[in-house]
Image (cartoon, rainbow, N blue to C red):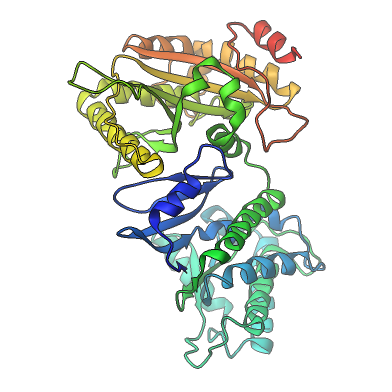
Length: 483
């Protein structure tokens, strides 16, 4: 989608404020990315000083297994949900359905081979969709959906250890100019609806945990251009799509908490350090390009002395805060828990070249962001001897307090627990206090803070409670209960 005469500086200023529904990641090279509720909403492609086009994140408009299980094929809810997102999307990104992909996991495919009931479900799904296609959609789908042909292709991929997929292509309808019309959307919605029903539910509306949800790939036919006055409506559709995704699936508490931590006005009153801090970016990787040995930091904050001029290497003017955010007990241990993040920071600091690259790039990007949003040309020099790594654990319900305390102060401090969970924890994991000491010995300030995020189950804002520290399980429980 193109926007008529919108300057890049306008859209960056629009989303660059710390207080707002959206938050923008700005890059001098590459696309800018706009987030909403911690979820990627769209990318901004640039052409000099202008916005070249908007690229949406397709996944926010797609249904998934969790929310589809809330529907049954005898209701119009599923069809209505598909129709709404396709209609909203097509108004700005007209596209034509190009391919449908069926997919089954290796484990489920093995169950089909070994279990008569599953073999019957497998066959029924294909026979049902075949009948529907032959009756209604032969003008769109050429594939005869032959059960034996599908089985043969899946067998071949199974033997070659490939992903078990079967692709169904729609006809290249060059004569069809209706893809922007409601009539075309109705047909496509009906095709999606029937494929989902046949592979996710049986004829009695029972859920079938066999195939994954069919994937629907669209090709873009043209770029729509809208005026600035239409842009707000587009924003509302994006916001609604993400909120609908949350309602139909579940609220991704950690992403939501991360986003409001970046944007909420309340934050400045939750901890003295945040009174005058610059919120730079969310979901920032410690290493660019290569995925090997890189970590991801939830939030990067920096405290900048804007009155101090960087004269030489000995005169830093910025203090860096690397912040990890966790919500409740489920994400504290495990492969992406607090041990993992401490390991990432330790590896980052231990590799001098990697650490220099990380800091140098951050300095450039922080300065560039401030120049774009605030028109301030400030050289940023991060104090490498005064870096903070803080983990903030938000607790959303009382029953989680004891679980959080047990995980942090008992399980992760127990060598036997670490050894027993070795296959679920990063291989370098040791007891938590030792890992914290290793990072502190590298000159990094490590702190664990807690937040009472139980504002009558309103997860759209931070609570007014002050962030607090706790050294024992008893102290954590006591402070969380304080009014």
